[in-house]
Image (cartoon, rainbow, N blue to C red):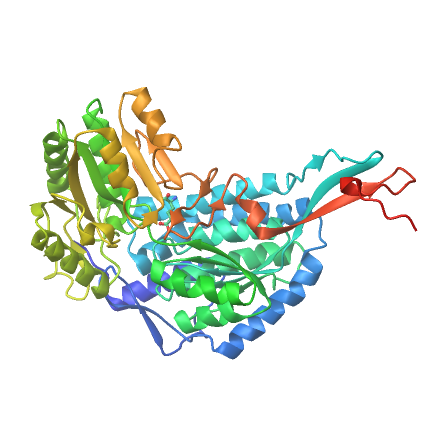
Length: 508
Ligand code: UN1
């Protein structure tokens, strides 16, 4: 495994950031960011104070006054330019994603591609912010709805998608006429500064102030300053259910809007007719890819008793061969966990699973600790469980997969739905009736319900998000844009008379 030295890490990061327009030579601060690749420092920056957050929100609100009046397709043209800059700097941003959060090259580039994709989507959307026209019960009247910008949007994003999640929110918010203040994960400040520098360039080149996009750096306290700011119309927060439990009520208390993307506990049902080659590949990508650190990562396999042994054996055989190592090395498929805390929860969950009757099938250990003492590489792990015990109901952000058996599909669907989270789900089957049932009202209760693919790796065209403790928010494609706008209902009277609705008379 080839691991960079501290100076190599910082100089690679500084070069990638500089290519995106971030000058780190004048930066420097007390907050040291450590790379999961080897645990060594990769950045040192200053965090924002609550006063900085207020100032950023004030700049954003001032920019909003003008931005909301810019025609939506003109706003779309700025997003188109941003998308072009992202294409140009795809490798620079991907390098920062790898260095700051430890994603392998292909997944880091895929994440930046997701930013490009949402920009393309948003450009088209900028000409399609449609409202409806409704028939009126009164003669000579027309009803319609108009969608208007909402205001300042606060975006709080997590370490595991340090740039894409912001871009889903921001590309859509900008075409909708909103301005954005971003509190990125404290794990990925350089990713944030570089992405925001490209967006600023797109805005300034088009003649705007650049204040339409703001970044504030820091931990939860900085995020909470955004959450509590009355000038922030919508808080879009991605992270743990614990975080969402705090954010949601605080925003609601001031009658703000929130859009929450919280934990998942995603399962795949494997039916008796499933194509086991395809199923195995689908499971391995979703469960071990990104080292199990996607909110859509597969955490449970619920397999029919006729195939459960075969599926478990195939997944275990694939796991034995997975190349674990530095995400900077070509060929690595499983990079590091983000930090020691993540490793601790991986270990604790494995112990809890075996204590509650589970048997370890494959994995279970930390590896490469001799090469990288301060980094946390672990083996993707499968535990066969007799039942859905407490630990299986909990999201562990690591490559830890529980396998359960079922006998009839209703039982499998009940197990799928029995956890508190409701983000993603899938079924592997060749039986159309099983697939349809899983997607029906009596099927999966999740926001994402797939057939013959894993739980992760959604495209930007669909609405992304989930139910129950996942928070209920929807981002990205479909009509998710509506969360970023306010709706006005208009009644237009061209009758020359004044008939009242519901037949009310009020003669004066
Ligand atoms: C997340 O893990 O927070 O569907 C987002 C996926 C990605 C997005 C995941 N497109 O796996």
